[in-house]
Image (cartoon, rainbow, N blue to C red):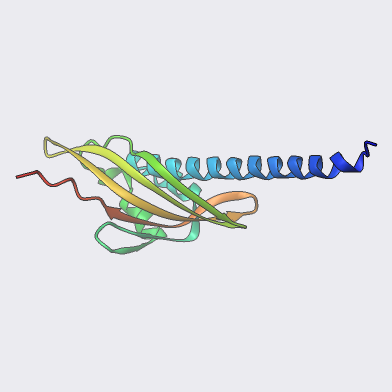
Length: 154
């Protein structure tokens, strides 16, 4: 004899798992968009856009190992300080981990810039700490590590 209880609990568990997966995917997408927005604002030298996506106590660790406060980062990206012709950063190889109201995002950023007439390509591994403030994700920190170009054989 078929009992409704035999399929109700498995169906509810499956629906709950599907909903949790969709929620996680949505958060991951929002976090990757946040990182891309921050990278775009850096390339555009748009401190107001940077300010909109970082926390009040934001810190950034540069590829040179310097620790910069939010104010220093905003000042660095003043439009009058823009040098060369940077191109858009492209984020790839994302690793996103959400821990309640905090998240870790690691990506590879690649880009190019023309500096003193010379085109240069570069890659960084970037790590971000994001926090959810009132339903909106913001970056609390960023750290960049340069990726060395492959050595020439020979």
